[in-house]
Image (tube, each protein chain N blue to C red):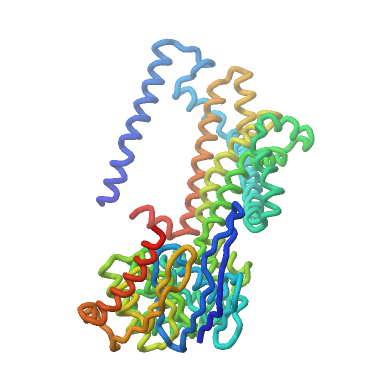
Length: 255
Length: 257
Protein backbone atom coordinates (compact mmCIF):
# COMPACT_ATOMS: atom_id res chain seq x y z
CA UNK A 1 0.00 0.00 0.00
CA UNK A 2 2.82 2.38 0.90
CA UNK A 3 6.10 2.44 -0.99
CA UNK A 4 9.04 4.63 -0.07
CA UNK A 5 11.86 4.62 -2.63
CA UNK A 6 15.15 6.00 -1.30
CA UNK A 7 13.31 8.82 0.41
CA UNK A 8 15.42 11.39 2.24
CA UNK A 9 14.56 14.60 4.03
CA UNK A 10 16.94 17.40 4.92
CA UNK A 11 15.76 20.43 6.86
CA UNK A 12 17.30 23.84 6.84
CA UNK A 13 17.31 25.38 10.31
CA UNK A 14 16.71 29.05 10.98
CA UNK A 15 20.44 29.62 11.19
CA UNK A 16 20.81 28.10 7.74
CA UNK A 17 22.38 24.82 8.85
CA UNK A 18 21.30 21.67 7.07
CA UNK A 19 19.97 18.87 9.25
CA UNK A 20 19.49 15.44 7.78
CA UNK A 21 16.30 14.22 9.45
CA UNK A 22 16.01 11.10 7.37
CA UNK A 23 18.73 9.45 5.30
CA UNK A 24 17.80 7.54 2.14
CA UNK A 25 15.11 5.12 3.22
CA UNK A 26 13.34 2.38 1.32
CA UNK A 27 10.33 0.63 2.83
CA UNK A 28 7.18 -1.08 1.59
CA UNK A 29 4.08 -1.56 3.71
CA UNK A 30 1.31 -3.91 2.67
CA UNK A 31 -2.44 -3.39 2.68
CA UNK A 32 -3.88 -3.72 6.24
CA UNK A 33 -0.46 -4.26 7.70
CA UNK A 34 0.35 -2.99 11.20
CA UNK A 35 3.88 -1.58 11.18
CA UNK A 36 5.52 0.03 14.20
CA UNK A 37 8.50 2.36 14.04
CA UNK A 38 10.74 2.29 17.08
CA UNK A 39 13.96 4.15 17.81
CA UNK A 40 15.58 6.91 19.86
CA UNK A 41 14.56 10.56 19.70
CA UNK A 42 15.61 12.32 16.51
CA UNK A 43 15.58 9.18 14.37
CA UNK A 44 13.15 10.72 11.89
CA UNK A 45 10.11 8.63 12.87
CA UNK A 46 7.75 11.59 12.95
CA UNK A 47 9.30 12.98 9.76
CA UNK A 48 8.59 9.67 8.07
CA UNK A 49 4.89 9.90 9.03
CA UNK A 50 4.64 13.45 7.73
CA UNK A 51 6.30 12.41 4.49
CA UNK A 52 3.80 9.59 4.00
CA UNK A 53 0.91 11.97 4.75
CA UNK A 54 2.21 14.45 2.19
CA UNK A 55 2.58 17.16 4.82
CA UNK A 56 6.25 17.65 3.98
CA UNK A 57 7.96 17.03 0.67
CA UNK A 58 11.00 14.73 0.49
CA UNK A 59 14.30 16.25 -0.63
CA UNK A 60 15.07 13.01 -2.44
CA UNK A 61 13.22 9.92 -3.60
CA UNK A 62 9.55 9.23 -4.08
CA UNK A 63 6.57 8.08 -2.01
CA UNK A 64 3.63 6.14 -3.39
CA UNK A 65 0.39 5.29 -1.62
CA UNK A 66 -1.82 2.86 -3.54
CA UNK A 67 0.33 3.44 -6.64
CA UNK A 68 -0.37 7.19 -6.46
CA UNK A 69 2.62 9.47 -6.04
CA UNK A 70 2.28 11.55 -2.85
CA UNK A 71 2.94 15.21 -3.54
CA UNK A 72 0.40 16.85 -1.25
CA UNK A 73 -1.93 15.79 1.58
CA UNK A 74 -4.63 13.33 0.51
CA UNK A 75 -7.87 12.57 2.31
CA UNK A 76 -7.45 8.82 2.87
CA UNK A 77 -5.34 9.41 6.00
CA UNK A 78 -6.18 9.53 9.69
CA UNK A 79 -3.73 11.14 12.10
CA UNK A 80 -3.37 10.56 15.84
CA UNK A 81 -0.73 12.52 17.78
CA UNK A 82 0.87 12.18 21.19
CA UNK A 83 -1.46 14.90 22.49
CA UNK A 84 -5.17 14.41 21.79
CA UNK A 85 -5.44 18.07 20.56
CA UNK A 86 -9.23 18.12 20.86
CA UNK A 87 -11.16 21.37 20.49
CA UNK A 88 -12.15 22.45 24.02
CA UNK A 89 -15.30 24.28 22.87
CA UNK A 90 -16.77 21.17 21.23
CA UNK A 91 -18.32 18.22 22.99
CA UNK A 92 -17.13 14.67 22.36
CA UNK A 93 -19.49 13.99 19.46
CA UNK A 94 -18.66 17.26 17.68
CA UNK A 95 -14.95 16.62 18.20
CA UNK A 96 -15.33 13.27 16.44
CA UNK A 97 -17.29 14.92 13.62
CA UNK A 98 -14.51 17.51 13.19
CA UNK A 99 -12.62 15.31 10.71
CA UNK A 100 -15.66 14.89 8.44
CA UNK A 101 -16.30 18.61 8.61
CA UNK A 102 -12.74 19.56 7.72
CA UNK A 103 -12.85 17.12 4.81
CA UNK A 104 -15.83 19.06 3.51
CA UNK A 105 -18.25 16.19 4.11
CA UNK A 106 -21.76 16.71 5.41
CA UNK A 107 -21.26 15.91 9.08
CA UNK A 108 -24.98 15.18 9.60
CA UNK A 109 -24.53 11.97 7.61
CA UNK A 110 -21.72 10.90 9.93
CA UNK A 111 -23.52 11.17 13.26
CA UNK A 112 -24.45 7.51 13.28
CA UNK A 113 -20.90 6.37 12.43
CA UNK A 114 -19.56 8.69 15.11
CA UNK A 115 -21.93 7.11 17.63
CA UNK A 116 -20.85 3.63 16.55
CA UNK A 117 -17.18 4.55 16.93
CA UNK A 118 -17.77 5.97 20.41
CA UNK A 119 -19.56 2.74 21.25
CA UNK A 120 -16.63 0.73 19.87
CA UNK A 121 -14.12 2.65 22.00
CA UNK A 122 -16.21 2.45 25.16
CA UNK A 123 -17.28 6.09 25.10
CA UNK A 124 -21.01 5.53 24.61
CA UNK A 125 -22.91 7.96 26.82
CA UNK A 126 -20.12 10.54 26.74
CA UNK A 127 -21.31 12.26 23.54
CA UNK A 128 -22.26 15.51 25.23
CA UNK A 129 -19.28 15.69 27.62
CA UNK A 130 -16.53 18.20 27.01
CA UNK A 131 -12.85 17.26 26.66
CA UNK A 132 -11.95 18.83 30.03
CA UNK A 133 -14.36 16.39 31.71
CA UNK A 134 -12.48 13.35 30.35
CA UNK A 135 -9.30 11.60 31.48
CA UNK A 136 -6.22 11.61 29.24
CA UNK A 137 -6.94 8.09 28.02
CA UNK A 138 -10.54 8.94 27.15
CA UNK A 139 -9.45 12.10 25.33
CA UNK A 140 -7.05 10.02 23.25
CA UNK A 141 -9.90 7.61 22.44
CA UNK A 142 -11.90 10.56 21.14
CA UNK A 143 -8.90 11.54 18.99
CA UNK A 144 -8.79 7.99 17.62
CA UNK A 145 -12.52 8.11 16.84
CA UNK A 146 -11.98 11.43 15.06
CA UNK A 147 -9.25 9.86 12.92
CA UNK A 148 -11.35 6.76 12.16
CA UNK A 149 -14.61 8.56 11.31
CA UNK A 150 -14.02 9.13 7.56
CA UNK A 151 -12.90 5.47 7.45
CA UNK A 152 -9.43 6.16 6.03
CA UNK A 153 -7.39 3.31 4.56
CA UNK A 154 -4.28 4.53 6.33
CA UNK A 155 -3.85 5.42 9.98
CA UNK A 156 -0.74 7.32 11.06
CA UNK A 157 -0.08 7.32 14.79
CA UNK A 158 2.70 9.41 16.29
CA UNK A 159 3.37 8.07 19.79
CA UNK A 160 -0.37 8.10 20.50
CA UNK A 161 -0.04 6.56 23.97
CA UNK A 162 3.21 8.31 24.90
CA UNK A 163 1.58 10.81 27.25
CA UNK A 164 -0.52 8.24 29.12
CA UNK A 165 0.32 6.45 32.34
CA UNK A 166 1.66 2.89 32.05
CA UNK A 167 -1.59 1.13 33.00
CA UNK A 168 -3.79 3.15 30.63
CA UNK A 169 -1.16 2.65 27.98
CA UNK A 170 -1.38 -1.15 28.12
CA UNK A 171 -5.15 -0.98 28.09
CA UNK A 172 -5.13 1.33 25.06
CA UNK A 173 -2.70 -0.88 23.13
CA UNK A 174 -4.95 -3.88 23.51
CA UNK A 175 -7.97 -1.80 22.64
CA UNK A 176 -6.30 -0.51 19.49
CA UNK A 177 -5.63 -4.12 18.47
CA UNK A 178 -9.27 -4.98 19.06
CA UNK A 179 -10.41 -2.03 16.93
CA UNK A 180 -7.94 -2.97 14.24
CA UNK A 181 -9.30 -6.57 14.21
CA UNK A 182 -12.77 -5.12 13.58
CA UNK A 183 -11.84 -2.41 11.11
CA UNK A 184 -8.77 -3.46 9.23
CA UNK A 185 -6.50 -0.60 8.19
CA UNK A 186 -2.92 -0.03 7.32
CA UNK A 187 -1.32 1.43 10.41
CA UNK A 188 2.03 3.17 10.79
CA UNK A 189 2.64 3.52 14.52
CA UNK A 190 5.55 5.44 16.03
CA UNK A 191 6.61 4.57 19.58
CA UNK A 192 9.46 4.76 22.07
CA UNK A 193 8.35 1.62 23.82
CA UNK A 194 9.90 -1.65 22.64
CA UNK A 195 7.24 -3.95 24.20
CA UNK A 196 4.50 -1.80 22.68
CA UNK A 197 6.18 -1.95 19.27
CA UNK A 198 6.35 -5.76 19.35
CA UNK A 199 2.94 -6.37 20.90
CA UNK A 200 1.14 -4.40 18.20
CA UNK A 201 3.08 -5.04 15.03
CA UNK A 202 3.20 -7.37 12.10
CA UNK A 203 6.60 -5.86 11.45
CA UNK A 204 8.80 -3.64 13.62
CA UNK A 205 10.98 -1.07 11.87
CA UNK A 206 14.00 -0.31 14.06
CA UNK A 207 15.53 3.09 13.40
CA UNK A 208 18.63 4.92 14.57
CA UNK A 209 19.32 8.62 14.89
CA UNK A 210 21.48 11.32 13.32
CA UNK A 211 20.81 10.84 10.52
CA UNK A 212 17.54 8.94 10.88
CA UNK A 213 17.68 5.63 9.05
CA UNK A 214 16.25 2.13 9.17
CA UNK A 215 18.56 -0.34 10.88
CA UNK A 216 16.45 -3.45 10.49
CA UNK A 217 12.89 -4.56 9.78
CA UNK A 218 11.78 -7.43 12.02
CA UNK A 219 8.79 -9.63 11.25
CA UNK A 220 6.95 -10.50 14.45
CA UNK A 221 5.80 -14.12 14.36
CA UNK A 222 3.41 -14.07 17.27
CA UNK A 223 -0.16 -15.34 16.99
CA UNK A 224 -3.11 -12.96 17.01
CA UNK A 225 -5.22 -11.94 18.83
CA UNK A 226 -2.50 -10.92 21.24
CA UNK A 227 -2.66 -10.28 24.97
CA UNK A 228 -0.29 -8.92 27.59
CA UNK A 229 0.61 -12.54 28.53
CA UNK A 230 2.72 -12.63 25.39
CA UNK A 231 5.37 -10.62 27.21
CA UNK A 232 6.37 -13.86 28.91
CA UNK A 233 6.58 -15.72 25.59
CA UNK A 234 10.10 -16.76 24.61
CA UNK A 235 9.66 -15.35 21.09
CA UNK A 236 8.51 -12.01 22.48
CA UNK A 237 11.62 -11.90 24.65
CA UNK A 238 13.83 -12.77 21.69
CA UNK A 239 12.30 -9.98 19.60
CA UNK A 240 12.65 -7.38 22.30
CA UNK A 241 16.27 -8.40 22.94
CA UNK A 242 16.97 -8.02 19.24
CA UNK A 243 15.37 -4.57 19.05
CA UNK A 244 17.08 -3.41 22.22
CA UNK A 245 20.41 -4.70 20.96
CA UNK A 246 20.04 -2.82 17.66
CA UNK A 247 19.10 0.47 19.33
CA UNK A 248 21.86 0.36 21.90
CA UNK A 249 24.45 -0.86 19.40
CA UNK A 250 23.73 2.31 17.46
CA UNK A 251 24.36 4.35 20.58
CA UNK A 252 27.65 2.65 21.35
CA UNK A 253 28.93 3.27 17.83
CA UNK A 254 28.50 6.99 18.27
CA UNK A 255 29.87 7.11 21.82
CA UNK B 1 -27.08 28.28 51.63
CA UNK B 2 -23.41 27.48 52.13
CA UNK B 3 -22.64 29.26 48.86
CA UNK B 4 -24.34 32.38 50.16
CA UNK B 5 -22.45 32.12 53.42
CA UNK B 6 -19.16 31.73 51.55
CA UNK B 7 -20.00 34.75 49.44
CA UNK B 8 -20.74 36.79 52.56
CA UNK B 9 -17.53 35.54 54.14
CA UNK B 10 -15.53 36.52 51.05
CA UNK B 11 -17.12 39.98 50.98
CA UNK B 12 -16.94 40.60 54.71
CA UNK B 13 -13.24 41.43 55.12
CA UNK B 14 -12.99 43.89 52.17
CA UNK B 15 -16.28 45.53 53.16
CA UNK B 16 -15.21 46.04 56.76
CA UNK B 17 -11.84 47.40 55.59
CA UNK B 18 -13.52 49.85 53.21
CA UNK B 19 -15.97 51.11 55.83
CA UNK B 20 -13.16 51.50 58.38
CA UNK B 21 -11.10 53.51 55.88
CA UNK B 22 -14.06 55.77 55.06
CA UNK B 23 -14.79 56.35 58.75
CA UNK B 24 -11.14 57.17 59.40
CA UNK B 25 -11.16 59.60 56.45
CA UNK B 26 -14.37 61.23 57.67
CA UNK B 27 -13.05 61.52 61.23
CA UNK B 28 -9.64 62.85 60.17
CA UNK B 29 -11.04 65.63 57.97
CA UNK B 30 -13.31 66.74 60.83
CA UNK B 31 -10.75 66.40 63.63
CA UNK B 32 -7.99 68.27 61.80
CA UNK B 33 -10.39 70.74 60.15
CA UNK B 34 -8.93 70.09 56.72
CA UNK B 35 -10.34 72.64 54.23
CA UNK B 36 -12.89 70.95 52.00
CA UNK B 37 -11.20 72.16 48.78
CA UNK B 38 -8.04 70.27 49.78
CA UNK B 39 -9.56 67.04 51.07
CA UNK B 40 -13.34 66.85 51.35
CA UNK B 41 -14.93 64.33 53.70
CA UNK B 42 -16.74 61.31 52.19
CA UNK B 43 -20.06 62.69 53.44
CA UNK B 44 -19.42 66.00 51.67
CA UNK B 45 -18.48 64.17 48.43
CA UNK B 46 -21.64 62.12 48.66
CA UNK B 47 -24.02 65.02 49.26
CA UNK B 48 -22.40 67.24 46.62
CA UNK B 49 -22.37 64.35 44.16
CA UNK B 50 -26.06 63.72 44.83
CA UNK B 51 -26.86 67.40 44.24
CA UNK B 52 -25.09 67.12 40.87
CA UNK B 53 -26.76 63.83 39.91
CA UNK B 54 -28.59 65.01 36.79
CA UNK B 55 -25.57 66.78 35.38
CA UNK B 56 -23.46 63.72 36.23
CA UNK B 57 -25.77 61.43 34.28
CA UNK B 58 -25.34 63.64 31.21
CA UNK B 59 -21.54 63.80 31.52
CA UNK B 60 -21.25 60.08 32.26
CA UNK B 61 -23.14 59.29 29.06
CA UNK B 62 -20.65 61.32 27.04
CA UNK B 63 -17.63 59.62 28.59
CA UNK B 64 -19.25 56.19 28.29
CA UNK B 65 -20.01 56.85 24.64
CA UNK B 66 -16.43 57.92 23.93
CA UNK B 67 -15.03 54.94 25.86
CA UNK B 68 -17.20 52.40 24.07
CA UNK B 69 -16.43 53.99 20.71
CA UNK B 70 -12.68 53.82 21.37
CA UNK B 71 -12.99 50.23 22.63
CA UNK B 72 -15.03 49.15 19.59
CA UNK B 73 -12.45 50.74 17.31
CA UNK B 74 -9.60 48.98 19.12
CA UNK B 75 -11.29 45.59 18.60
CA UNK B 76 -12.38 46.34 15.03
CA UNK B 77 -8.87 47.43 14.06
CA UNK B 78 -6.77 45.39 16.48
CA UNK B 79 -8.09 41.90 15.68
CA UNK B 80 -7.76 42.18 11.86
CA UNK B 81 -4.29 43.71 12.31
CA UNK B 82 -3.29 40.73 14.44
CA UNK B 83 -4.61 38.34 11.77
CA UNK B 84 -2.55 40.11 9.09
CA UNK B 85 0.55 40.00 11.28
CA UNK B 86 0.21 36.29 11.97
CA UNK B 87 -0.65 35.24 8.42
CA UNK B 88 1.77 37.36 6.41
CA UNK B 89 5.47 37.57 7.28
CA UNK B 90 5.74 40.50 4.87
CA UNK B 91 3.01 42.46 6.61
CA UNK B 92 4.45 41.52 9.98
CA UNK B 93 7.69 43.17 8.90
CA UNK B 94 5.79 46.19 7.62
CA UNK B 95 3.19 46.68 10.35
CA UNK B 96 4.81 45.55 13.57
CA UNK B 97 7.39 48.36 13.82
CA UNK B 98 4.63 50.91 13.15
CA UNK B 99 2.46 49.46 15.90
CA UNK B 100 5.33 49.46 18.37
CA UNK B 101 6.16 53.03 17.36
CA UNK B 102 2.53 54.08 17.84
CA UNK B 103 2.57 52.40 21.23
CA UNK B 104 5.81 54.04 22.35
CA UNK B 105 4.61 57.59 21.71
CA UNK B 106 2.99 58.90 24.93
CA UNK B 107 -0.71 59.29 24.08
CA UNK B 108 -1.01 62.35 26.33
CA UNK B 109 1.61 63.97 24.15
CA UNK B 110 -0.23 63.38 20.87
CA UNK B 111 -3.70 64.11 22.22
CA UNK B 112 -3.40 67.91 21.76
CA UNK B 113 -2.16 67.48 18.19
CA UNK B 114 -4.94 64.98 17.46
CA UNK B 115 -7.59 67.33 18.75
CA UNK B 116 -6.06 70.14 16.70
CA UNK B 117 -6.36 67.98 13.58
CA UNK B 118 -9.71 66.30 14.31
CA UNK B 119 -11.44 69.15 16.06
CA UNK B 120 -13.88 69.14 18.95
CA UNK B 121 -16.65 66.65 19.70
CA UNK B 122 -16.67 63.02 20.79
CA UNK B 123 -14.95 61.49 17.78
CA UNK B 124 -11.40 62.74 18.57
CA UNK B 125 -11.75 61.38 22.14
CA UNK B 126 -12.68 58.00 20.67
CA UNK B 127 -9.53 58.14 18.58
CA UNK B 128 -7.43 58.89 21.66
CA UNK B 129 -9.14 56.05 23.55
CA UNK B 130 -8.53 53.76 20.58
CA UNK B 131 -4.84 54.70 20.42
CA UNK B 132 -4.41 53.98 24.12
CA UNK B 133 -6.34 50.70 24.00
CA UNK B 134 -5.57 48.90 20.75
CA UNK B 135 -2.04 47.66 21.49
CA UNK B 136 -2.93 44.89 23.97
CA UNK B 137 -5.68 43.73 21.58
CA UNK B 138 -3.21 43.34 18.71
CA UNK B 139 -0.48 41.69 20.77
CA UNK B 140 -2.76 39.29 22.65
CA UNK B 141 -4.74 38.29 19.55
CA UNK B 142 -1.54 37.70 17.59
CA UNK B 143 -0.14 35.60 20.45
CA UNK B 144 -3.36 33.58 20.57
CA UNK B 145 -3.43 32.97 16.83
CA UNK B 146 0.21 31.87 16.88
CA UNK B 147 -0.43 29.52 19.80
CA UNK B 148 -2.53 27.01 17.84
CA UNK B 149 -1.02 23.56 18.48
CA UNK B 150 0.99 22.63 15.35
CA UNK B 151 -0.65 19.18 15.39
CA UNK B 152 -4.05 20.78 14.76
CA UNK B 153 -2.62 22.70 11.82
CA UNK B 154 -1.10 19.48 10.44
CA UNK B 155 -4.44 17.75 10.95
CA UNK B 156 -6.33 20.47 9.08
CA UNK B 157 -3.78 20.37 6.29
CA UNK B 158 -3.98 16.59 6.01
CA UNK B 159 -7.75 16.98 5.59
CA UNK B 160 -7.01 19.51 2.86
CA UNK B 161 -9.10 22.16 4.60
CA UNK B 162 -8.63 25.67 3.22
CA UNK B 163 -6.69 28.24 5.24
CA UNK B 164 -9.90 30.19 5.74
CA UNK B 165 -11.77 27.16 7.07
CA UNK B 166 -8.90 26.36 9.41
CA UNK B 167 -8.95 29.97 10.59
CA UNK B 168 -12.69 29.94 11.30
CA UNK B 169 -12.98 26.48 12.84
CA UNK B 170 -9.66 26.16 14.63
CA UNK B 171 -7.38 29.17 14.95
CA UNK B 172 -9.88 31.92 15.78
CA UNK B 173 -11.78 29.98 18.46
CA UNK B 174 -8.44 28.80 19.88
CA UNK B 175 -7.34 32.45 20.08
CA UNK B 176 -10.58 33.73 21.66
CA UNK B 177 -9.38 33.52 25.28
CA UNK B 178 -6.37 35.63 24.26
CA UNK B 179 -8.59 38.12 22.44
CA UNK B 180 -10.64 38.51 25.61
CA UNK B 181 -7.53 38.94 27.74
CA UNK B 182 -6.58 41.83 25.44
CA UNK B 183 -10.13 43.20 25.45
CA UNK B 184 -10.24 43.29 29.25
CA UNK B 185 -7.10 45.43 29.33
CA UNK B 186 -8.39 47.52 26.42
CA UNK B 187 -11.71 48.41 28.04
CA UNK B 188 -10.06 49.92 31.13
CA UNK B 189 -7.47 51.68 28.98
CA UNK B 190 -10.30 53.11 26.84
CA UNK B 191 -11.71 54.87 29.91
CA UNK B 192 -8.30 56.43 30.51
CA UNK B 193 -8.03 57.43 26.85
CA UNK B 194 -11.44 59.10 26.83
CA UNK B 195 -10.58 61.10 29.98
CA UNK B 196 -7.20 62.14 28.54
CA UNK B 197 -9.00 63.34 25.42
CA UNK B 198 -11.44 65.33 27.54
CA UNK B 199 -8.61 66.87 29.57
CA UNK B 200 -7.05 68.28 26.45
CA UNK B 201 -10.11 70.06 25.19
CA UNK B 202 -13.82 69.54 25.74
CA UNK B 203 -16.91 70.96 27.39
CA UNK B 204 -18.55 67.63 28.24
CA UNK B 205 -17.72 64.37 29.99
CA UNK B 206 -16.42 63.32 33.42
CA UNK B 207 -12.84 64.30 32.51
CA UNK B 208 -14.04 67.81 31.73
CA UNK B 209 -15.96 67.87 35.05
CA UNK B 210 -12.81 66.97 37.00
CA UNK B 211 -10.77 69.65 35.23
CA UNK B 212 -13.32 72.46 35.60
CA UNK B 213 -14.35 71.49 39.16
CA UNK B 214 -10.76 71.62 40.41
CA UNK B 215 -10.19 75.00 38.78
CA UNK B 216 -13.21 76.32 40.73
CA UNK B 217 -12.01 74.64 43.97
CA UNK B 218 -15.02 72.32 43.88
CA UNK B 219 -12.98 69.33 44.98
CA UNK B 220 -16.06 67.33 46.12
CA UNK B 221 -17.39 67.36 42.58
CA UNK B 222 -14.02 66.23 41.19
CA UNK B 223 -13.97 63.37 43.70
CA UNK B 224 -17.50 62.35 42.74
CA UNK B 225 -16.50 62.29 39.08
CA UNK B 226 -13.45 60.15 39.89
CA UNK B 227 -15.62 57.66 41.77
CA UNK B 228 -18.03 57.53 38.83
CA UNK B 229 -15.12 56.90 36.44
CA UNK B 230 -13.85 54.01 38.58
CA UNK B 231 -17.34 52.55 38.78
CA UNK B 232 -17.68 52.85 35.02
CA UNK B 233 -14.35 51.08 34.46
CA UNK B 234 -15.26 48.29 36.89
CA UNK B 235 -18.70 47.75 35.34
CA UNK B 236 -17.28 47.74 31.80
CA UNK B 237 -14.60 45.26 32.84
CA UNK B 238 -17.28 43.03 34.39
CA UNK B 239 -19.34 43.31 31.20
CA UNK B 240 -16.41 42.14 29.06
CA UNK B 241 -15.77 39.27 31.50
CA UNK B 242 -19.43 38.29 31.20
CA UNK B 243 -19.25 38.24 27.41
CA UNK B 244 -16.08 36.16 27.71
CA UNK B 245 -17.94 33.62 29.85
CA UNK B 246 -20.69 33.43 27.24
CA UNK B 247 -18.24 32.94 24.38
CA UNK B 248 -15.73 30.70 26.13
CA UNK B 249 -17.73 28.68 28.67
CA UNK B 250 -14.96 26.07 28.79
CA UNK B 251 -12.56 28.56 30.43
CA UNK B 252 -14.69 29.19 33.51
CA UNK B 253 -14.80 25.55 34.60
CA UNK B 254 -11.11 25.17 33.90
CA UNK B 255 -10.35 28.01 36.30
CA UNK B 256 -12.59 26.52 38.96
CA UNK B 257 -10.98 23.11 38.90
